[in-house]
Length: 83
Image 1 (tube, rainbow, N blue to C red):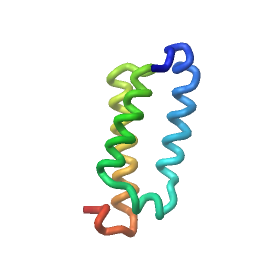
Image 2 (tube, rainbow, N blue to C red):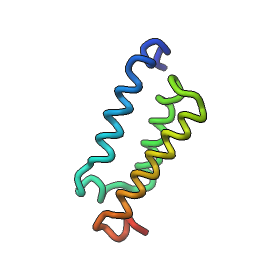
Image 3 (tube, one colour):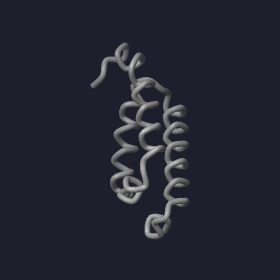
Image 4 (cartoon, rainbow, N blue to C red):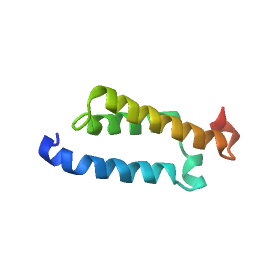
């Protein structure tokens, strides 16, 4: 568990880096996105976010991330990921 003082300082930076990495992944990584892998990422991020943000803020951040990733997958060239 992360101590709250540490988490307040580093979680926003970690979150920003993670979002940037996920949302700007090359097509080869997007092709490997599976529902199970994405669910594991969302669960892990949620555990970290709850140390700093309120429940409603955490849900909003995760929902925005899920929407952005869904949009990336929908616009990708890989039909099986679109379905």
